[in-house]
Image (cartoon, rainbow, N blue to C red):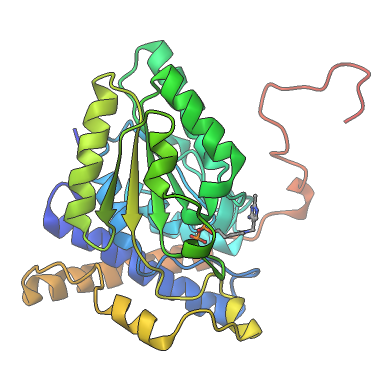
Amino acid sequence: MSLPHLADPAGRYRTMRLIRSFEELALEWVRSGLVVGGTHPYIGQEAVAVGVCAALDPADQLTSTHRGHGHVLAKGADPGRLLAELLGRVGGLNGGRGGSMHAADFSLGILGANGIVGAGAPIAVGSAWAARRRGEPTVVASFFGDGALNQGVLLEALNLASIWRAPAVFVCENNGYATTLPAASAVGGSACGRAAAFGIPAETVDGMDVEAVRAAAGRAVERARAGGGPSFLECLTYRFEAHHTMERRFRLSYRTAEEVASWRERDPLATGLPTGRMAEIDREVAELLSAAAEFALASAEPDPATANDHLYASGLRPRSGAAL
Ligand SMILES: Cc1ncc(C[n+]2csc(CCOP(=O)(O)OP(=O)(O)O)c2C)c(N)n1
């Protein structure tokens, strides 16, 4: 059974709108100082998270990136708890300990956003392999950017996924830049070529079109579920905002205004749903988000006495005599 909230075009639009509005609110909260440390906005890339998650079942899993809010919300995380996580409050998805870049919800198969570029891929392969060994039908989607294509750990993960026939779907969100470095000047060969080298089927898809992403992801998930092993999707997309909310301070100019404007014209939220229906959904999302914000703002700051909690997995104890 696919994720119920992404089962039809209206649900996919609603979730993209939720991600967009969530990100706009997060930007506001960063600028007003409510969120400390900034965030990496996902605005512009919504069709990738939603398209891929629309091909997943509730029990399937994902690993995410430093730009993770979209993936986490698309899989079904509670927006109020994610906002509380950004604020570092106890009501957060992870009790306020993970923050924007390390939000996780294992109950929904969200194995974690990740501040280390490329680091989600081996986690995804390990989890996919474990599921296969246990005879479970779980598929794991692993999101990463074009910047991760040159990380050794990603290549190792592709190799292991291939030889183990792990039910993993590698999703490269090629937004054209790793921070300010254009992919064109950093990626030797091609994204799909990385996968082909390990015998993994790969395809490039329009990452601004949620239905195209969903169709391609559907083929990959079906293949993984049927025991056919991993697949690789390169989704061509664009981030409309800065790499990070601190970027504007540095007055970086690595993209022309024309380039940003031309991608904005291909906004993934222009789905073709009737305008009235979209307006109705927009109102629903605005209400949902305002309740989410209220929940997050009302959530308490953690007690400083608990600062050392959650440092170790429960049940793990240092060997007697070993220094911590
Ligand atoms: C291993 C590692 N190297 C460098 C960084 C610093 N860093 C954070 S985001 C980023 C760019 C990542 O680009 P990409 O993978 O294309 O993702 P995007 O930001 O475009 O979504 C870099 C270099 C990091 N977090 N981890």
